[in-house]
Length: 259
Length: 304
Ligand SMILES: Nc1ncnc2c1ncn2[C@@H]1O[C@H](COP(=O)(O)OP(=O)(O)OP(=O)(O)O)[C@@H](O)[C@H]1O
Ligand SMILES: [Mg+2]
Figure (spheres, chains in turn green, blue):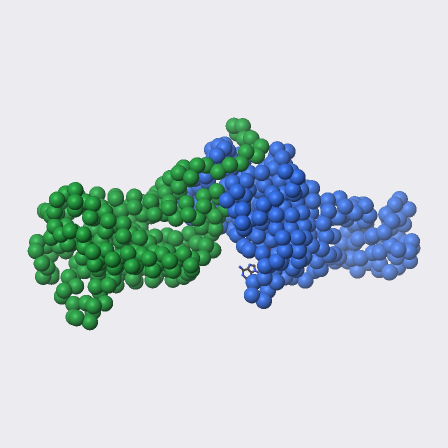
């Protein structure tokens, strides 16, 4: 038998920030513990970074590492906010976890906030690791440090919103297995078409027109103009990301099924 | 404060053309254990999940602790504990981790370690949910339902798949909740469990209540004589020796039940008749009808 357990009712919700932080912690731990998620969010971006900065496979403008590093940072955002989140949320729905959480005092808005904070936390970890490896490989980001940091932050938040919208749209409507397959497929297609390592300028015209409105292209293009060219706010890319975010989040809010 | 724990009036729930709940009215008193019984597909889970706020009713009125689970969800959720019929826990999450997480959503939770201990899960505290046995998973879900110190708990088949020890542990928990003034609404297919635990039993079939009351009132005052003997005794002949109004049946084969005014006289007649037939009546007993008898009588024998 055990220490005193007093079942006398004493109901009450914890303060919102405590609930959200607890859920955020659980979500981050789930990602870091899951082998496939780590492969997707850490290993693959690092392999792409090391592989493409070393191998002279493709013609790129400027120094190879300066071209590849921003692309890999964009890839990291996509892998966490889109692929990882879509698959994770899809299976949570399938296993009744979203439903069960819905019976706790944590509101749906609180749950969504926790998911967003968890995605951002994982992205910070990814950025730290990827930047460290890139710097070791000779990466020299351009632009005034503070200004570049602020601009990157804006682009990352907009990209995270756009990819999260896409992820939740898929996870909230498709079956978990379909989400798994579709999220991986979309990841590969966007990896190929989005200018992560292959410049879209090398595409045939028709393909390039399509590629340029993709969120991944906007994010890689935006990060590259800030970090490789020392440019100011990439307005066109930012608008593309915000448009994707607005459309996908609005659709997801209307179609998301919790069970 | 006087509103019942749960009050449902003419509740209706449809899924496409299936009518899962069809004008169901029931009330569960505060501080009591209410058991909902019914065949597979009778509408138990649908009813409970409407109370929990997961599903919307298509008709009727729902009040849980005096609140509307759809409109007053934010006020109601901290006050109730929920155990789903299946699932609800992230498969990779460890039992202890899950309980600590759910505890952190509440203002005055129970201690997760002590609760794990109470339910015999201490050595599985670090086992991922998906690697636990079905019965261990059930216990984790039960623990999560009560960790927030709710006033009202909904347990959908809490003892399905539990071994006898775990079943008794679960009964003890429900008994203790009751002693502490917690209201419990549970579903079960175990009649003995309902008989033991419940203050009130509600039997539902095809989405409506077919009987309700305390286990005692449902099983009634009438008693029956039961015994086992070789199959195929001639009961019609026995009945001629018994007072009119007595009924006898063999079900299943070799198991005999005599219903009517079961007194010393009837007992004597039956044993004398058995002796004359040269059969030994095994396991002869005089007992009240069981809840299972009542249940089968009300809901029939065909499979759903
Ligand atoms: N989500 C759903 N969609 C469609 N039909 C459903 C759904 N949930 C339940 N039903 C149907 O509604 C009826 C009642 O189901 P419910 O789950 O409430 O029964 P139950 O009494 O809990 O059964 P069991 O003892 O098997 O758990 C069944 O005919 C079932 O097929
Ligand atoms: Mg059920």
